[in-house]
Length: 306
Image 1: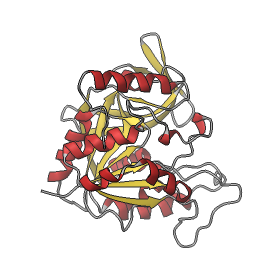
Image 2: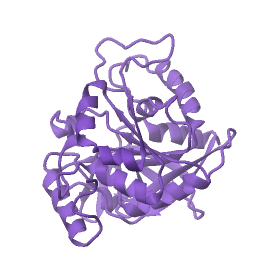
Image 3: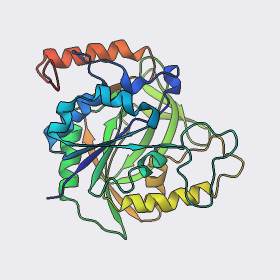
Image 4: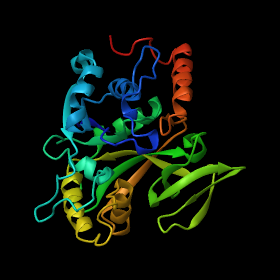
């Protein structure tokens, strides 16, 4: 059985959250942040290691919040997403201030992650079921460099919408064998009556059934995916002429291109848990109430890590 790592993406700047550090908002019954619930669920599911992707200037703040007792239960490591962490021959374009996207964030793990690993967002609550399913996949996965085995936890779209604004989701098509056949990053999604509406990458309006399976950036990869990601990031940088200030290297788009090229097979692990997170400031009250309800149902102790 493989050892497994959980990689938590926490370097985002929280632009839709008013520029604040939404990953560090205290929302739990005893003041926990969302990612502490993810860590708790991951340890319970059997993960051996947790890797935080953050920014160097946030390291001290993270270490104040992530309790020492976490490191007593699981190996902990920090890596940093830096804007100038680029392949040879490339430099930060004039005017570029924002990170390069989720694909670039995961590249920060090169050298630090050598085992099968799951990827999650720091500011999303995924639920216990998702961690059990993805851990079990990774614990038993075998590397295949010609056609990489990948897993993705698929959520029901209506369970991932915010009451306070639009969201971005990876909209998925899944075959009868629970294999991903297509994924497209879709923007500005919101509920309108008994459907959801949004825009595709070309800016065209799309209508989505509420039961559509979507990605919440909870992926499972073998370690050799990092080498592939490094090569594809260089290709991405070489092809963004004219969009250097805003273009993003997104994980769903990388996986989607690998699917089209038959370089990956993606197993979709379905979760019926309800997502919640702090995309917008107004989301915080709902998140606090949701964790309180889970505590009162006995899903979590009053203090996750003493």
